[in-house]
Each structure stands twice: as structure tokens, then as C-alpha cells.
Amino acid sequence: YTYDMYLVHGDSIEVFLKKERGKVHVVIQMGEDEPVYQGNDMAPSSFAVNIKETGNYTVKISGQKAKGHNSISRQEGIQ
Image (cartoon, rainbow, N blue to C red; front, side, top):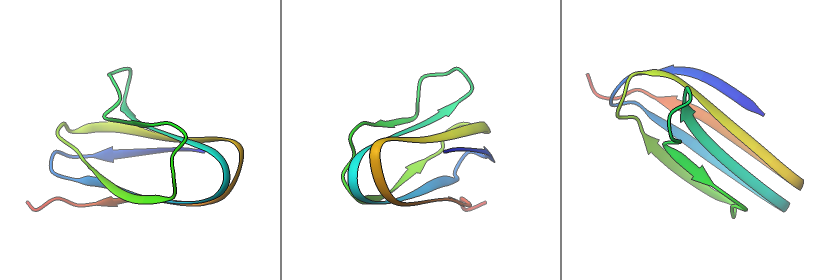
């Protein structure tokens, strides 16, 4: 799955992974820049990634023989 979202400095991306089996990988990246987050073969988890630069971000969740659920949401920063 791939999610595209516009984020501003101070926002965060909330990620919830409920993996039942298999391998799950997560990459959060702005354009072709280095990923702001990368996780491989992740355990079930819930976490936030703080955004330091305004722009268009892509969240990519991929898996191998994976089963489970995920949720991605934007949390607005304090203005």
C-alpha cells in the first residue's frame, strides 16, 4: 500500500501496525530524499514520526506473506 500526503513542519504521521504473520516493511519519505523513517520486518506496533520539513510525503507499507491491519493518519502540529 502507498499513501501520499501533504504535511507541514510540526505535523506527525501516526502509524499503527497489527501484524498477525509474515514480514512487514514501512518507509516514509519526501520525494527522493532519504527516508525520514524506515522499518524492516516490523513487529506489531504503534508509533509517530515527527515531520521537520513541509512537503509531499509517501508512506509505503509492503509485506511478504503478511496478514494483518494497518492505519496511517496525520496529526496536525501546534500552530
